[in-house]
Length: 118
Image (tube, rainbow, N blue to C red; front, side, top):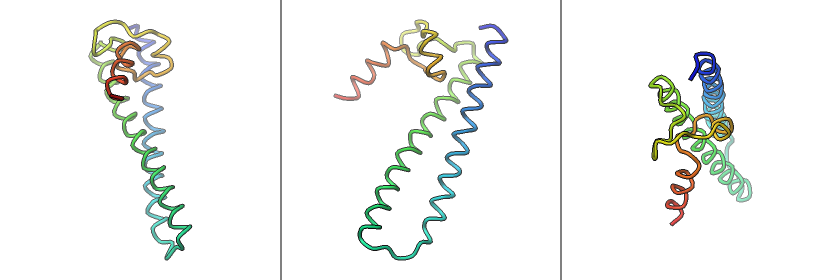
């Protein structure tokens, strides 16, 4: 990977990382502020629980993405970025452009998802 490409990719990943960290911090601050609303009726309680579940699932997704970004930054430093961690083949440029933190080629990712759904 050329030095210019590497710097651009690192900057892209670090920018996305900052966005995620800020989103997680803001979500935690919102949760703390929302805890002081006082008693809720049944409909409000149900809506609040639904919102909490939704926010929790988003933050879990964001946390997983954050870990993947950190791992991609390590792969860049180690010089193995763009290689599938499973089969060792090159991950396509189109996939890396869409998901710069991808660790698996599309074939291995599909196999992993298929196994997870069983």
